[in-house]
Length: 619
Image (cartoon, rainbow, N blue to C red; front, side, top):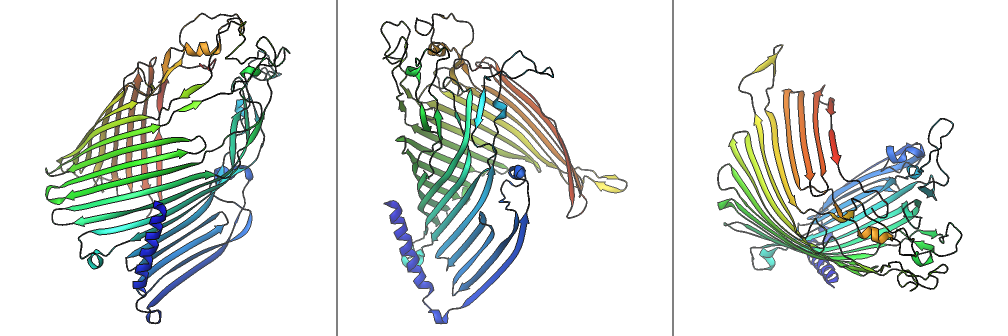
């Protein structure tokens, strides 16, 4: 309803002011039009195997093909217009146009499309086996069958996506001095439309195995996606001797859809290796032909309001931004809600000192999903006629209800407060510092412990732009005449209870019952439930030092050096650590105004220590 209202208002406003533009009559119109057209022929020849690397965003059709460029500009009365375009290939073209009607109504149009070649992974690295056999050259031979294998159903197929985008921006400037009794407010309603389309084919992967990721299957997935954005709102500005005030509002309605059919694959019926019949049927979720890699249709609505004020007499600026949005997943009937408030206060009253204080609050609410699994009955064996959960009472194994509630790790509240400052110590030397505090409260437990994630970040740095107080020369030529620039920054972060995979792995020893799956033996979910160690790649402390300097030796010669040292650690995650240092140097030399040479050297040395989780029974 709001989208239709915006369209109606913009059409009415455009018609109103168009009538004013043409008030003088067409016969008395002042016309001034310029048109320029260029055309040519181009050709390309490339090996198909190198398209992705040498021409990732080129169509690369072989043979001779025409291309056209054109431009147009001019005016009719007080209406100005301009436009242009480029046609290179069917999948490589761009156009634009602008119309300005006495600055009352402005319209901008833009359209472009291009081709993007995508990689085709042959998956050969997935073929692996463990064997003690050696081939004729004394190298380990692959066992048959391998432990890990793959199937590429479209080997050698070229994949690519055609992407196009069209944007139309309409802005109306309301002359308040004529229509609103001189109201001291500038009002600019706007309505924008955007459509993005992606068509083509890309590689899609799925697991072809039943009990583990031992068989990866690849095939082509057709892509026919579209995004439609309808944006409407206004910007209102008021100026007086006290300051400048701006209020704006924007409404977004976005649709995403996929018109292509998802790829399908046939999942084989499991077979017992000992020939005991279909005793696995009660643990298999799916057999036969099924779709995979399907993208859900979705829609997003958002409201964005902004207030911006500046008071020159006290050198103070104030900004507030509020966002409220909702995203609907139609395939799964799930909703994602976001609310956010951001504010910033800036002041530079004290000579040489500037201060910025900001506050941010964010609320993300992603609906939980109840996952109800398929529970078929066994067709043979001791559990024939029963499901694995509601099993035969004569069997003594511990069962598990496979249905569960998926709680979202995205659902959380965030609070953040920060301070940035800069102080001019002396001409050319500036001291900078900042501090930020942030707290993240997650609705569900995804941290080490039950506490919220709390972050403290402090940064201090000095920027220098210094001219040497004496003159240097080599062979009579002056050097280092220009200022030397340098920067030194130290950053410290302390994070309590960072995001983690709670109980993501098992460390130590545990006793298991080898009685077998039907006789009270240890089940795989019991091993999973015994995981006792939290994994994370997020640090609890970070130290980062950065230094760079540039020496302008001569007008056409300069030397730059850079060094960064970084250390991260998390003692709570079994001693996770990561450190690195990177020195580099580069030399720039200009042979002439149009030719310059640059040479550089970079060395990086780092080390990461972490607990390795082997993929056996889910870690």
